[in-house]
Image (cartoon, rainbow, N blue to C red):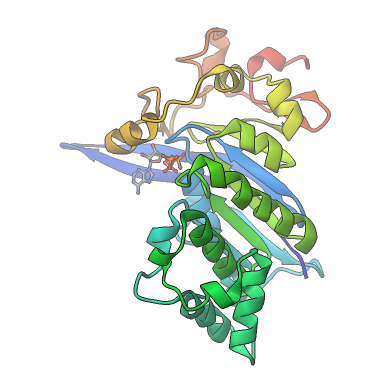
Length: 317
Ligand SMILES: Nc1ncnc2c1ncn2[C@@H]1O[C@H](COP(=O)(O)OP(=O)(O)OP(=O)(O)O)[C@@H](O)[C@H]1O
């Protein structure tokens, strides 16, 4: 069984209060994409660009201000709301935070299986789930989260996402808290599940290198807007938007995320965009900016299936 998610014109506004004044800020602005069975789409952007807000809306943890998110099954019919949460599951950054320290791994996996009535022999089904994520059930099932390594915990979190029968997985920075040495194993596992089981995956990351290797397509998000999208190799090897070029050339700054979380600003010190600013969100930082960049800018096709939201490409490449 497969499922497809269509995200159309997604917008999320927040009201920020500072003293007596209030401002309406746009965290996600007119984002459209499709998650297709057997494919991984990477959503790439710096801290504060709106990645997690999009993830939370897809997981129905937050409501869009406008736009739609539609899940269709293999038959092309819309999946009813009551089954949405079985089909669409999240894998979070911190596997420790998403697992209860007092419960065994078996308990974590048996609960969603029971809840969704997916197995008569729960123990066998837990073992099967652990096998799907390359963990030895006999060794792991009776343990508690702190008795596992970080990589094993994240595999358990993936197994738990699969337990209710997920067909779409939103993986929000799934390896950024793991040791570099075990990241590859977890990403390879997600990649295998995507290929062999036909999962549709949204891989959220600030890391361009893993986005290129583990995704079919990439969307680059900057201050709530998708500034570039296309096949993974195309976007990384031939970036067109000045922001993607900057991102591809810049060394990652490990402290940026912490700074941004504290301040509510993105890594460049920018607040989210005001709802009444229609121009390019990158124009203040862009070395190529001209006066036209204050005007609303459309997606321009720069190669096959490759689009950049930039005035430079108004006449194509
Ligand atoms: N509940 C909220 N109220 C007000 N502003 C918010 C809220 N949630 C997010 N924002 C703002 O929306 C913008 C996008 O935040 P979001 O967490 O989606 O970014 P992100 O790309 O996921 O960053 P990170 O990688 O740090 O998680 C940020 O400027 C953030 O400050």
